[in-house]
Image (cartoon, rainbow, N blue to C red; front, side, top):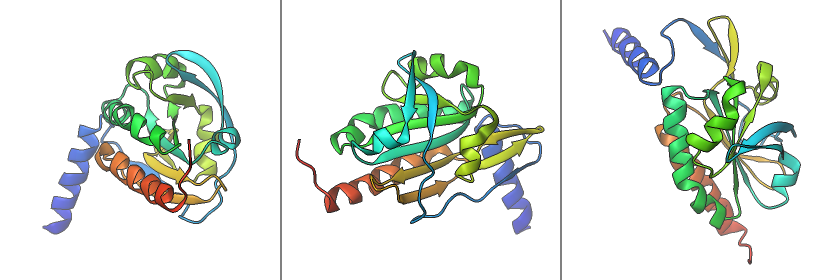
Length: 190
């Protein structure tokens, strides 16, 4: 009976996130303490094209890198709203937020404006090449998508938080806690 309840819960969460109930598989994400792979991607901030460089962002402080399956899907929209609301708190701690998706990559410009509310950049990862480097991909309907995984990366490139959960609700809470812990141990002056 327990496995049936687990299956029902999993299917309910999948449906709530706007993902298909068809089978999908996921990779394990990079662990805490691992070196974050460097990358540069085409992105959008407030609907305007830009290039996001992890190396350049880390020069300013920690980076909150979150991968999400597809722009404008229900769960990804909720997560973007939550990150948009929390962006000012991250900024106060010198942290940069960047969302990365392998799904609906042609829509990242609109997504950055409408759902990210002009607060943070969102990058397109066609073919999930960066998501694969971070070991956070899933297969769904024959496509490789980025799984819902949040990382907090220290300026030295070490991963401070690695959190995968298809439910978007706790990603912001965990990322904020990791950045606060880093900020308390490494206070910066303005």
